[in-house]
Image (cartoon, rainbow, N blue to C red; front, side, top):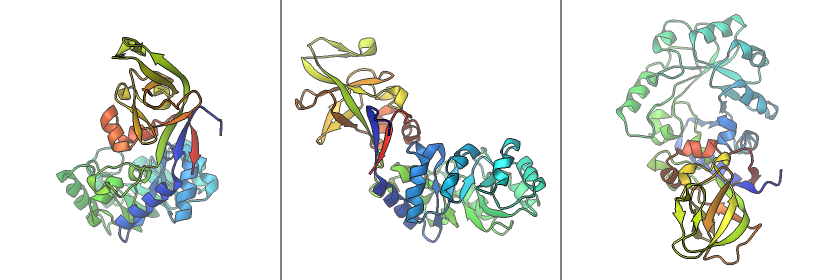
Length: 343
């Protein structure tokens, strides 16, 4: 705790409830958790503690630095970006499994003595992964593959590519020694049981994001940014607020200046569109979001003053529509200056 003038109010019960709901939607498949980007901005260590206590057994990070940051928690971690030469010392220690993505990584892993690993196969996204031919040609012979996985490109849409990828991936069943198959991310879970295979890997929906309509009313908001009022001021009719003077007061108004801005991940796209919340009331944001400060209209809240705290209206689907940013960016962009307070 740094006692900063801004904080993230984090709902641990909502996080766990979201994982349990996603686990139920996964049917007979195990339900893991993507915790890359420091737990999607919430803090990976605290996220893992809560989800592991709830029964989650499979966690996914992007790189070995992220794996090392949670190593002391003793959970099963898979490193999605594979293993470079520079990663081999950490990988050999056995605290996490690489997700091998290239033929070079497979060879590197074999030459180092191998050990349990996961493997990513590209089924059409053309991002990371071995080709289907690599997988079926014997490249993985002798490799201890725990989970063979792929990644859906368009799961948040009703796109024909989803079924093409699913069918391509399903055809690999039994073609390797992999113990499990895994395809579905958060949105993939919403596509139905045919996409679940043996293990699902939700990320966004764990943290309150809604990637498809199937999640409306199922997942709950986990993170609410809160900022302290630094100053309350009266702006006269005709007065302008903030950079570039994009807001002009039509009449005398009361304004609160909050300690929050785009350096904290509260993006400029919220300028003249976002809002704070107070006792169920929406307090409109006035003018441009600057690096460290925003202004909100508190004319109807005479009790608010310097030192008081306000929540930001940050329900992810609506905030994404307002700001023009994706729900993922709204989460992972939350800056280090926030105190992260779990309840």
